[in-house]
Length: 163
Length: 293
Ligand SMILES: Cc1cc2nc3c(=O)[nH]c(=O)nc-3n(C[C@H](O)[C@H](O)[C@H](O)COP(=O)(O)OP(=O)(O)OC[C@H]3O[C@@H](n4cnc5c(N)ncnc54)[C@H](O)[C@@H]3O)c2cc1C
Ligand code: FES
Ligand code: FES
Image (cartoon, rainbow over all chains, first blue to last red; front, side):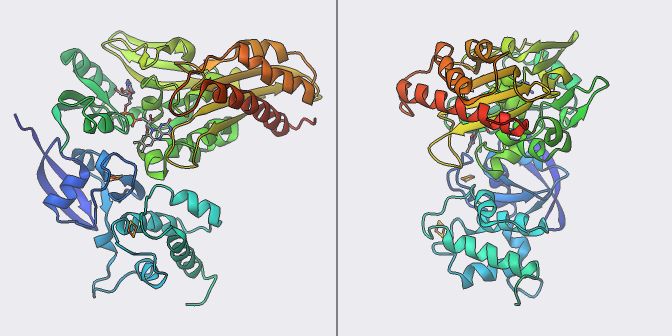
């Protein structure tokens, strides 16, 4: 017997609602009901970070989060970063510039962790950044370019280097 | 989709207790970082679940009238680490739970789940043992508060009655006031790894910082459930603060612990690590207390 529930929440700034199967993960709901395909299905057991999204400003792996828990929450995915005229955000551009993207499968998840870091408004050492980014597995880049992209964007946002 | 038979959602402790009584076969779901993974792996597939994740009244940290620290069972690891009360009085716990999994796991994982799973490697558990924490359980007839050492029964089993949920972890003032603590997690990599052996020490020095007034040491993965090393504790209490006593203390733990061989590490390696961690942790506690060696 399928069990459904109405779930209302804010997705990338817009209020949305849909009936969802209570067995759905947040990844299932975001991909299938809202076509947020930046939210990837990697390991689906909370280890790789490919499905990472921001919920009320904190990072969560949406594969181990029930869709019904989204009720009343403010959820952001990579799709929400693009500006109205279709321009990439500074952190996305930095990933391209630093060759921090290869196959791209891990990228949306990593960038959402980077967004949480950048929006905290404070500075971090490289070691602190490594720890904050440690919830992501990348099979391609070897991580150094990812770290550099986050570092440079952080420095720019904090006004430590000229654009 | 998860293989879930039915989902019941509780928004208050009272609702959770009623749902427990109504659905005796249902399993409790907090953050789900153990439960949902086990459903995915098939181990807990097809079960009824009672979600307590939405009970806000058992989330957060406060000081009560006796200055005991009360940590609601649904408080996430990251909120424990960032909390001012924790940082001021029991920083060791904030540091210990900052070693769990990854940032995302620390946002979803709760201290209630970390203790109710009855797992010896749980990163909060050894520190809660070394803080001599209390566990609060709420059921139909009210609250019951028991020492954490009584809460653990055997590997994977804790003392929760069919009508109960865990509602708080309490650290009484006399257990933290004047103490300094340190936790060391030994694992193969820094992030996303299960503890090979974890050691947590809390130390209270005399006024002149020359004598150990009290020492509590506890381990994860040194036996089937988290445990104190009482022989080592009774050896060091009352002794002078010096390197030799700390060395002896660390060797004494071998009379307490009982690690096993597993694919993660051999018994011999775990014993070796346990001694070294005890030595490093107690020395760090002395340093944090302003003592010299
Ligand atoms: C990728 C990954 C990495 C991890 N790394 C670590 C690590 O490094 N260290 C570590 O210690 N853990 C780790 N874990 C395990 C897990 O995150 C923790 O054990 C966490 O504390 C579980 O909390 P939860 O709220 O998610 O629990 P849940 O999965 O919801 O529940 C865990 C168990 O406790 C019971 N339960 C939960 N809350 C209550 C309550 N209030 N009353 C009664 N019963 C309750 C549930 O029925 C279940 O049996 C990891 C998990 C993942 C997925
Ligand atoms: S797909 Fe969610 S963490 Fe891997
Ligand atoms: S770019 Fe391929 S996994 Fe990271």
